[in-house]
Image (cartoon, rainbow, N blue to C red; front, side):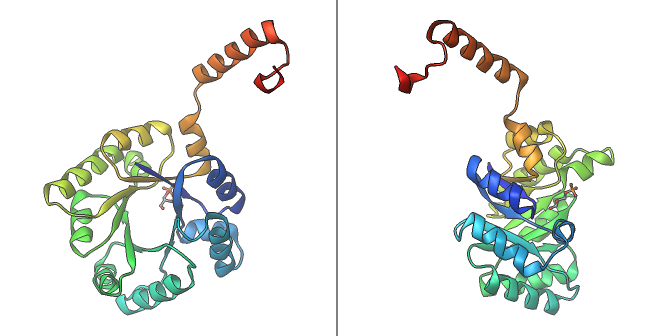
Length: 224
Ligand code: G3P
């Protein structure tokens, strides 16, 4: 399972790109609006941090298929490297996806809440679908079960579309997606940090430190 960062905060992207094995960055209009500055400058700053090989996703705003295709083409031209366009599922979005496939532009069909939506998106040629895990959990659904069903359905029909699960609020949701065979998850920096944190790990490391210091003091291996 690949880890992607779901933010446009440059400080978070810089930190996570240095310390975590992330494959790229996803944005959406809400994430971009949070930064409250020039849109193209945000995309350029993200690209400068992640380099040309990691994938950057940005979402279209126009509502008609033609408008979505024109925005996707512009985004793809200006993205400065590996790029995927995010398009919310809907009739116009599906039409745009089929057109963008012919142009070789990668599509992530987003705002997915059911396996049935995901299957149609994949048949339209979407390279990725983004089910919203936490938002499903919040309405007494099971985000992880929806992810598992989509993974199974794609495997059943031999569809190359990847499941890029989004909307996470805790590490349990991430772990359940991993065991479901989810291809990618996109997480905030806080959730990514929480994934590797564990109080037992902290206790184990503290024990190593105090045992070492009881014999070697402040010396490290390089001082011996
Ligand atoms: O990309 C979609 C994702 O960012 C939604 O997350 O936390 O707004 O449900 P959230």
